Length: 377
Ligand SMILES: [Zn+2]
Image (cartoon, rainbow, N blue to C red; front, side, top):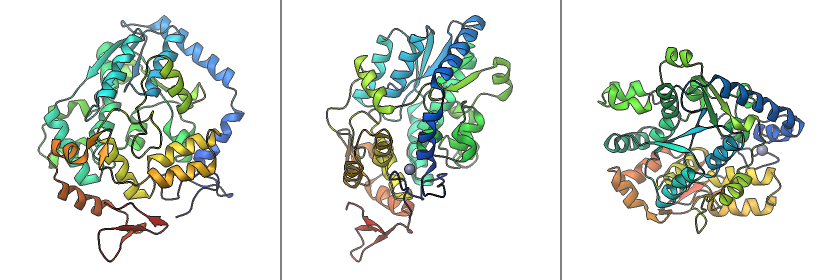
């Protein structure tokens, strides 16, 4: 495991590349932002907005996909600043929390319409279980539908413009060809949408789902999108992205932070809307040896909002802790809803633990990492 010389990303992170000085490409992309003419990008965005408003065929100028989180709140604020009339589209998280509910309701109070799409819960829970046990990702259906649902709504409402947040490859590192990508389309979704090789066709062929039961997880047909001539862009290409600033701005517009630090993150403004996210992030740690705290601390570190020392302390403290409780809910309750027992879960943790990074000690119940120890469960 090699670490970036500048931040705390390890070489085990999928798609991360290092330059000859040992700097990861998330850090390189961030440094390159200084060279970007942001005034010009802002003008480019303004031009797109004028064309969009002129050519509008439906009742709305654009779609803003929203979770109700700090970033989507910021996207809506920005869209309104540019006099756009957005239809905000929410794809329900797998296990919505009360705080997530409140933050999503807050989006409407900004003066926009919101469509919430909440797919069949029986199907969703089966998909959570399959995702967890088969590919080690409980959040598979959430990640699939958060991308497919806004596109399907765009087709239904004839909306030709869609505004996403950050380009996650630019922010968190990725392969070269994707770092400067400004649009989110089907090719992006298939490459980076977090589907881990589990496709909708597999669910139909091997797990007894009817295709129409899976419609919220299916991207519209290419010819439908082509006919619509949809422009689907990352706002982060036009405005310098800063998650922390977004959180502070969103707060001024009614977005609520958690009262305490969110487990496994080291902050109180991320991952507020789904009881299952602690499990999702824990599996990332077991597979790759780093967790969500590393992502967040790296973002703060690159922006000089935290010292390297304090970032390291937070990572050591929060990454890899077993998600006994998450946002106030006990893990056994969270698992019971998707019909997974604690024993099944622990076996699954062991199956997806990267044995090159972690090993069991003699007592068998403490996982040791080559470069440290995972907290005991
Ligand atoms: Zn780095």
